[in-house]
Image 1: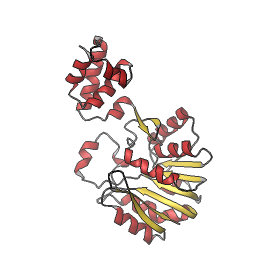
Image 2: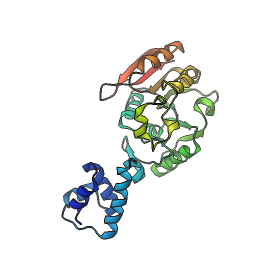
Image 3: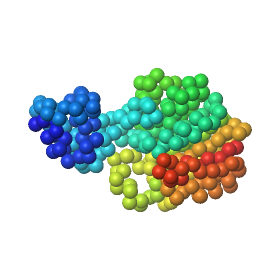
Image 4: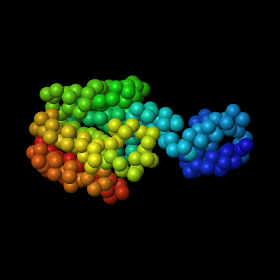
Length: 262
């Protein structure tokens, strides 16, 4: 079987098929694309068939490959952590517009946000927290692989930082409502990183009221949230005494991040 025949037989979207075949063959995606007539050894053909079947069953490509790119960083991922999404880059971009020497990343997962900020601001003190020991293990390994020093801590939200204050606190917390039909498509990812009560706002209700006591004077709280949640999140921030509360849209025009200043 040739490369072209294998890609066609996979039944997958073209880019996903190329990524999986590149992993099996050891070639780059560009080489796979440029070599449609190359014959595949039976071992590679069988392995590609196995990976394709996993993808057709709904398993994300990132979990099959064991990695995902985020903000120029190649991160290891597995089912213990949420797969980093492109829209989360907005959190990093907004953070980079602020002046900060210390930052707290709540619910760090794979460490994507914390590591991206550390790469961009090497002199900053970056603390990253997660309630999942398994997720924190993934984040720590990513930090070591990338040579980036982050203070990793195990705990739920602010419990791991006691009375410390930061110039910037940010999070991509769970914000999907229980029973949301989209959860069926996310069944391979950890529910604890996705679901936050009946309306998807339970995590916000835990984080926002406590944030001000962990922000330095003038520090910012930035939270990623879902479609249509911006008004509720802004109201929580205003009620908790934050100022300059506002929402920023992602590239699709969806209100994706809301923030306020202490």
